[in-house]
Length: 210
Ligand SMILES: [Zn+2]
Image (cartoon, rainbow, N blue to C red):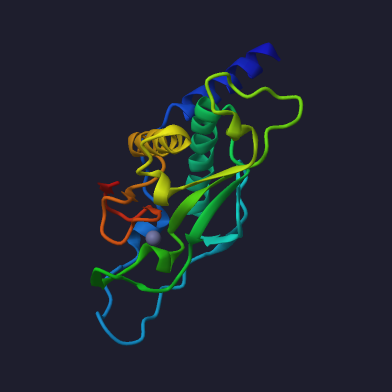
């Protein structure tokens, strides 16, 4: 019995240490499309997903493989938030998941949104501190109340609470970039058209421009 538990713990420990990236079923789907005219997206499996570790503000439509990556993403959000704010957010604000369209700047290519293989994250919602909990001493008192962190404007925050939010957002993206078992493409304010959101996807190539 003890031996089995130990084995389970060891296995869980290995999973937590970021296994190497693996091939995904969507890697074999062709992304090249006609640059103009009506677009047809390949029929791929899509599921509705509300978030297991942290809920999304509204349900997502995503490919099941991408949903598994999102669970790991939510765990990184939770852990980073607990380190910085002493509590996890209760909701992830997003600007969309499945959406059959081209990449705006590369119209010969289908957007990963067209495969349910992408998510645009706009921010995070934190509920008020529970009555019996104590706010970490170094945090501004205002953070005992409900608050939101948004990529725009908090990514650029330099003072007070805004600087803390910037620290959270930057720490989060650094960790996500280092986790090769979560996303392959990570775009943010440094990339044209992404001032107010992070775009994360699992395309069969690797791009980081946060
Ligand atoms: Zn996007």
